[in-house]
Image 1 (cartoon, rainbow, N blue to C red):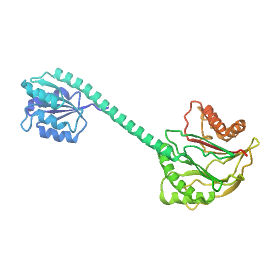
Image 2 (cartoon, rainbow, N blue to C red):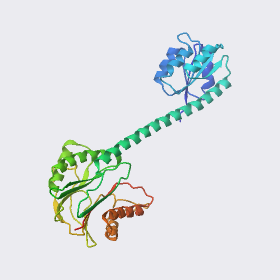
Image 3 (cartoon, rainbow, N blue to C red):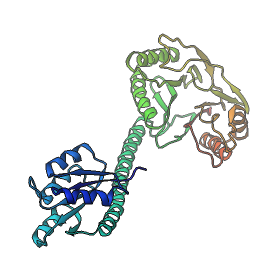
Image 4 (cartoon, rainbow, N blue to C red):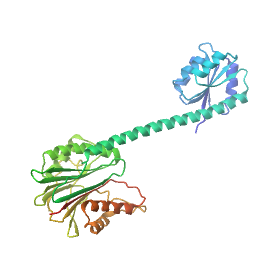
Length: 382
């Protein structure tokens, strides 16, 4: 770290030279013979840590000069040299110019050096306190921004799962950071007996992903009000994102449109893990490929029929489960998820989703969760 700079100001050349000789071997020294000349130096070099100024100068007093430096160097140590002991002048300097010490001429070089060294200790502490204060303000502002993002996300995500006769629906949602990029939504129309379910995963993490997810959710809510078949819905959403938002994020989405009366539905997928169907304790992945939304303009999507019989459970998940790693860097992967489903599939839907999440937590141990986890489970009861 470079040593702190010292500015000395005195209109008497002999005094100025003595000041330089005293300090030059320990600190970089800047010098001026007049207050206005010294002010120009201050305006051009904000790294000055110590200012030593004579009180009596022809163009302005030392007190006036030091007062002018407060705007540019608020933490600098100010030392005033005076050849007289005018109490009123000294009190003005201390009270209005943040003067650290005054020294009466003729001064002794060792005493001046000791005063400068003590002043620098105060200077370093003051600078560190200011850095800490700014960091505290930055953290408080960031915490407030996170809270706003959490509020936005709470507003976007459904407050609860729909209660539908003959079905159980449960969700486990766990962001890796303060806010997450996973999202889910429902649209249940009792008049037609249809349920539309969407689970998504925005690329990226924390606030940027959450904000992009908020944008996507706005499009999604508009679309849910005018439902389309899942494949058409994903194509429409993809075009909307490509047309308006040229960003690096993309959204993986699974869209299920479901007839609650007979348990039949259509399923389209854009880059999400394959849905999992559990029937008679047999676990099967539904092969529904697709490209995430927001990557390629004009992408078309496939949709496959899905049929839920009495007792069947359909699981829609984000890849935060299979991508979770333990302390050894080992991934949870698909095989562990399928085995966990086999072990717990007899549980009620809410308990099943929670147990699947807890198995991931047990696996990762103390390792950090690096991706959001969403588990949405639907079971047909009759």
